[in-house]
Length: 590
Image 1 (spheres, one colour):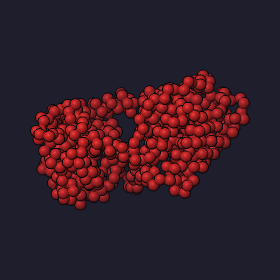
Image 2 (cartoon, one colour; image 1 turned 60 degrees about the vertical axis):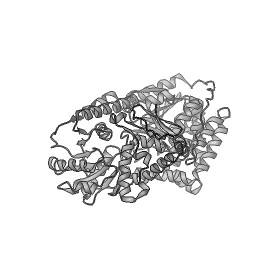
Image 3 (tube, rainbow, N blue to C red; image 1 turned 135 degrees about the vertical axis):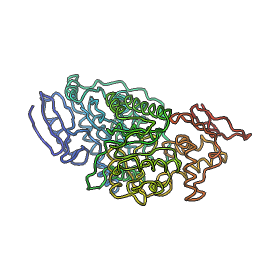
Image 4 (tube, rainbow, N blue to C red; image 1 turned 135 degrees about the horizontal axis):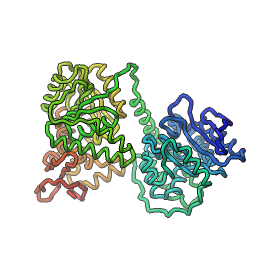
């Protein structure tokens, strides 16, 4: 193997006639496409085109857990604000077209996150092989930022996997595990990391990808979102250009992203992304002890979800509840979440096995000598929580952080039950814990700076996004969310159909309708939180009669379903544990 050239972002090596292009952005843990990287790739393609001895090209990354993260969003935001985005995207299209036009076979060897422009460069290759490492996630998330995949994503992906699957990938804007990516056709082969280069070379030896017949165009439903215009623009390109030339389709991509970049909503979505990244990193300069041992009090939906998540991130967990039935249901929920993670390729069976083994469940008092943080997740009743905190004050090490997962109750009131009130803080996770990134870090009147620092570090340690808020009823999220939910319930009570309410918000761009969200939260919990908020903020947060009087089927926590019935004769139906579905005028049991 001999090194023939090194650019500032990309290394070029020749290995027995195969050119290896290794992306390795200096002094950075991630590879991104900015103007300099695009110029480097263009330069490397010059050399490749001039070397008649080459038999193929393999694109790799030298980074530990990132292949290529996509376009440099700082560059995109600046260009969106100055009107320079069009020329940058056009240059990327030109360079990727050069890669796609090479006469020798090309293969992307993907390890780590491969997103946006990082995946689009692989679409310009003949073949794509990926490592089976959990860090390898593949997709086109641009629509979640108000943009579209405009370096060929909307053009080449439908030609590779068909319009229906391409629309799913692009409009959802999510990253897929390698297993799901393989099933969708985003990649050709999955191998272990140490076999990745050999697998890519084997693909090179197969030659250029055979020309395939155009896939039939499926009937894909048009997204009806008025809040974020990007899915609609992507949809038109995906469905309207399959019979046209690549050049025509790329021109539509370029026009669409240039126009979307000028919209305030797009620029705000990109800024929000940077704010989230800022909170993920934090700015604390003080070293804080890593959490290895935790306890969770309460094995309900939230408690079991928190315990599962902590154990999956390497934390040993004591899961405590007063009843064996509650623990049994909680552990079943933990098992289901782990099984789902394995099925989706998020973790291996061995990793799930290790995670399960980190949880010790008990319905009786258990020694907490080594516990560094306790998360209370019992029912949303102030007196119940106060009793728990009195017990924790006496039975936990004085250095342990005492946290509550309350949705709306006062942190300071709970801290009043603890000898050292400065160690009490709120850690408000959201349901389902395994999928919701946000955690509200709620600071009480007595909470110390050290406790805040430990809590923030802990939340980041377990790969969640912490947002610090002060102790006030509803904190931040529920103060914003509940007027919206309660108005939806009031509309329903006054005669608007559930279908119409939820569909209107889905069309606007919300991921879930407000009435379905109430059911996911639980009508009983919704009413409890609304009552707390009403005491502080008045009737704007008052639960509607239809919520307050709704029949409730508690059942098991993880299978609980609730029903609100609007009937003409005033008769309420008995509660049921069957799944809920929406119907005209009624939330019905399926």
